[in-house]
Image 1 (cartoon, rainbow, N blue to C red):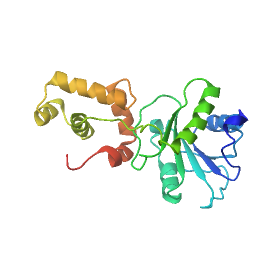
Image 2 (cartoon, rainbow, N blue to C red):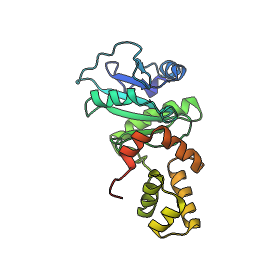
Image 3 (cartoon, rainbow, N blue to C red):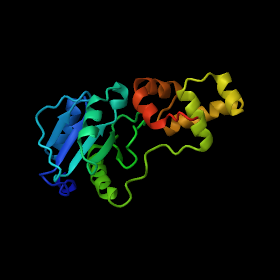
Image 4 (cartoon, rainbow, N blue to C red):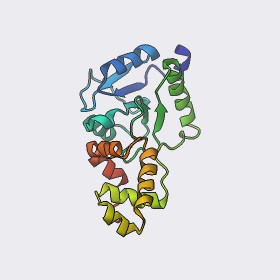
Length: 210
C-alpha cells in the first residue's frame, strides 16, 4: 500500500473531515499517513500546526450531506489559504450538493474495493495537476437550470408549468434528469438532502434573479 502514498511528504498536513471515527482510523491505518481528525461540527482530536509553507489537504467525507452539519467545513474554508487542496470522498454514493467555491476540488468515488480506493486517491492527486479531474458539478442544460430554480424555491407543479410553459409530463422528466445528475435515485431523496443542507445549497445553486 505504501507505494501509492510516496508522493505525500510527511510534513504535509492531511485533515479528514468526518463524523465516522472508524472511517478516519481505517483510512489512517491503510495509508500510513499522519492524518488529523475533525468532526463535521469542527471538533479537533488534537491541535494542528498549520503553516502556510506546508501543503494542506482536506479529505471531506461526503456523508456530510446526510448530517447537515457544516460548522467544521466553514471553519476550515475560512482559515486555510487558497492553495490548500480539497478532496470529496464519496463513501456512500449519496447526493452531490457541493457548496460554493468547490469548482476545482477533487472528487473521488470511494465505494467498493479498499485497495482500489487508495489507488483512486493516489491518481486523483496526480491528475489534479493536469486536468483538475472531471468537474464533478452536475452539467445542467439551461432549461434544467430554470426548473431547478423553481424546485429550490418550492414552487408548486401548476406554478412551475405556468412559469416555464411546459407540460406536467415534461416537468416530471426534467425532475428525474436533475435528480440523477445530483447523484440521487429519487426526487424525494433529492429534496430531503436539500432540506438538510439548504443554506449551503442555496449559496451555490439558487439564483435570486430567476
